[in-house]
Length: 228
Image (cartoon, rainbow, N blue to C red; front, side, top):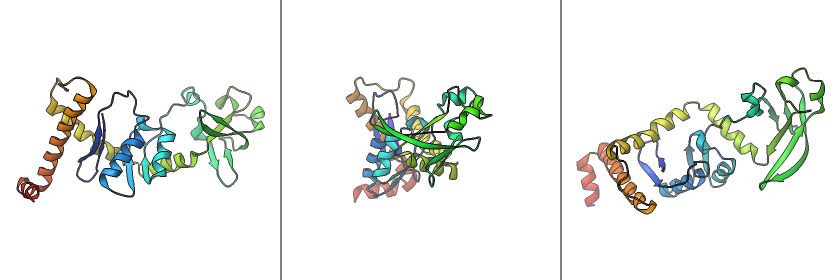
């Protein structure tokens, strides 16, 4: 189930029932639908780390959607006690990476992998570095930089500057889920097949939004608005 919820009134802006098992390919499409539903030129979208996908984030950036979400910590080196990529600082003025030992990894070449343009950086100083055992088991540590990495770095900087963003996301989007699940009861969906389940979910979303509007406006004002 994919939903977009506005932070002001906690109304469900758009939703979709899907049988895709991962959220990684859902961000741009759901955000685009929310932007269209709200009829706005720009949109701020906050999602959890399960939606992190570089290509999805860039797609949002290209259509005026500002994304904030944390990056999954999937570094094998970090889990094994060595330096992760986040410990290497990119210096855009010099187009180099600065490693924890203070050495600079310079750019050597670019190649294409899975349709992505990747730049490769390393330094030969690794051979005599005192921190090598904490960095890499190879001859030298190499860093790969995607052509759109600056977009992802902006997302991380945005999150660093607003650490409460993820808490606000939970308070916004978890409320509709919890309310709808409570109303559905232990049996959850009564229908079978994706189209029927989608129709059932649409009714739940409509009921939830009407309840929210009544709580915000009051039943009298809501009825008057419907009549007009």
